[in-house]
Amino acid sequence: MAAKKTITVEQIGSPIRRPDRQQKVLIGLGLNKMHRRRTLEDTPAVRGMVNKVHHLVRIVDES
Image 1 (cartoon, rainbow, N blue to C red):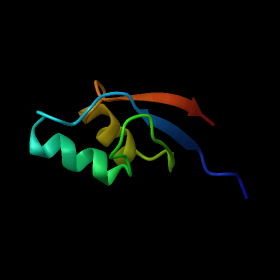
Image 2 (image 1 turned 45 degrees about the vertical axis):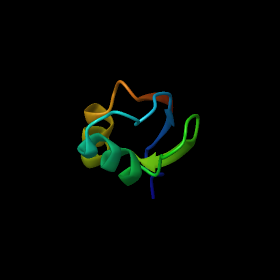
Image 3 (image 1 turned 45 degrees about the horizontal axis):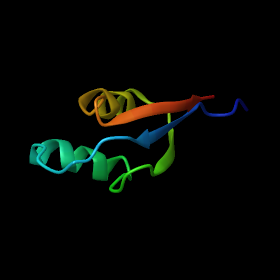
């Protein structure tokens, strides 16, 4: 069985004074404080969420 692909994202921007929708996307990704990192399954849904807040997060690792 092949290992699932993962993506590690880090929050680099503050959600303060951002639209409520963007704050909820960050929470959905498991990020709510600066410089937190989460390793998530690399799915189209997760990629879409990252694209919605691309200015607040960065991709640290793809494996």
